[in-house]
Amino acid sequence: MEAYRGADDAASHAFGGQSTRNQTMFGRAGLLYVYFTYGMHYCANVVCGEEGTAWAVLVRALEPLAGIDEMRRRRPAAHHDGTCAMVPPSCVRPSASPESSTGRIC
Image 1 (cartoon, rainbow, N blue to C red):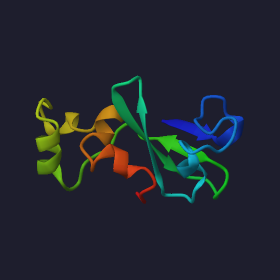
Image 2: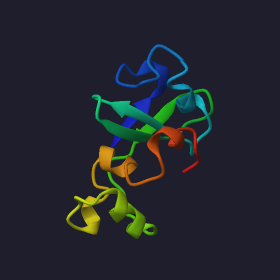
Image 3: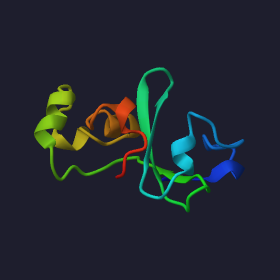
Image 4: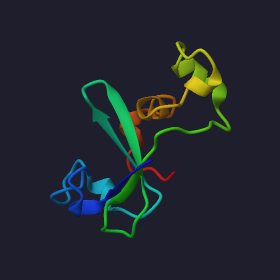
């Protein structure tokens, strides 16, 4: 697990204050902050602090309970259901379009 402690945490996208890119992190708990990293992957953080604090947790893995057929369609190279969503970039790809996911409620 990776947790980010708002604008005071140098590892956080919120470090240095609110911007257009990171504004979702400053929202209410339960929002999803999705971002593109290293020019090739999407990652997702779940906002978990009070509004305005920009506390968030990086989603490292998840267990799909529904929508597995859709996940398989989006990840044809996954060898079994467990690999459809086991690392941050994979967690986001099987979901709805990553670009439209930021700011959505988890």
